[in-house]
Image (tube, rainbow, N blue to C red; front, side, top):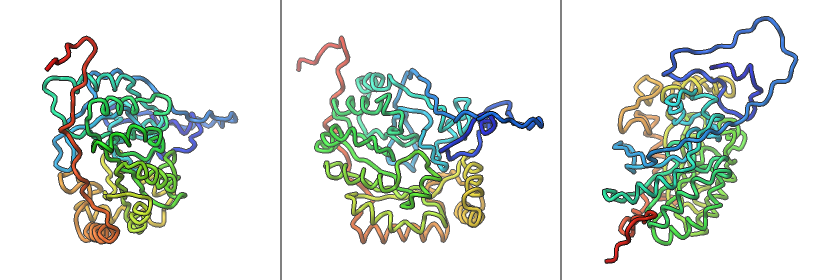
Length: 358
């Protein structure tokens, strides 16, 4: 499957390969036959297929996460961030975590209606639903499909709390819903700002809004009364971590109330993708970056154990944590947001259901 560079002209993508997923029995490799091609290769375009889900709420018991349930309107993400920890999930679909992850997307148009049914179930008990924890709900194809907006409408109608994480400026389209939910204590939004360097951002997250645009998103959401968290995530040693304080400062000036950070994670297929990207774009510091990561994970490129995978261990990780703590305190950016309200929840009424007369 690592043959897209030979079949297509790859433009504006972060992944440099398309290796088969770890569950595939066979892999394909392009080999030159000695015949030079004079024809112009077509540009590799994004393809979207449709999935009809039976359920959309996914539950977890991870002690590292502040939520126990989430929704993903899409599989794969056109933002194409090279470091995305969700890339390995594409292997479960028989697709590559490389270029396939950012070019072969799956939309779930019926997600809102399935969500409505799940919330109406007699046994359902409300707790904040997280959206954007795997792939971005406001990636470019949301403009066409509108799945996220319809899910928000369902959540708003039944007063259900939701926490959103995104880089996508399309969230501004939904400020009308978000502002109304914020007045009821039902929403908070996290905006990921990985760097303030537009050039670096374009290289590692090629189809995501520029850093300056994300600060505008924070400003507009905050002006509408939506509580916003600036997320300095992921921090990449010797590449983006020198910007930590500047990112928090910019987020605060834009109106963020809270802040958080996560260290770069390299699970499964993400590690070779990131190492190839570093070798191509930052060969002068690639080895230094990887050495720092190994120091924080007991000599490995990644340690998936609870309480270690998000931030690592050791002196370097402790320095970053202390820098964050001091900067956040100085700026008045709290780490813990107030709890959202669950007591307002009212199960949606499905078509044909008998209304409660009491």
